[in-house]
Image (tube, rainbow, N blue to C red; front, side, top):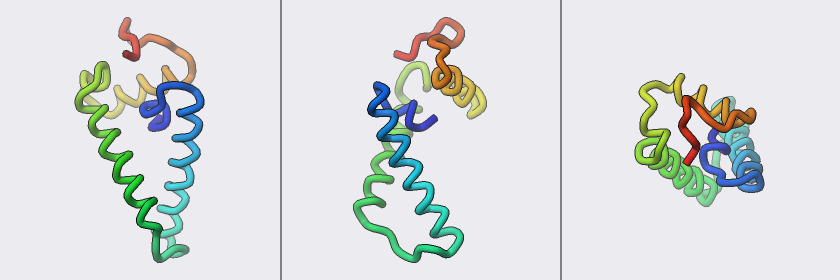
Length: 92
């Protein structure tokens, strides 16, 4: 869902999805004891992505209209699986 939120087109979404999957696997390795250090560039990029996600959710239509996480997730799932509109609201 994050890749769909950040990416403007298919290619960008695929790139974001791969990066986020890699980042999540590193997070899991840290939490479960497999990795004890991370590359600072990776941490910086993750931080930038987090800021971008927060900015989009708080300031861009229609995301800023959602009151709950559930509403946002339902909207993103509908978009991800091909439903172009949510209650008559287009993505942009």
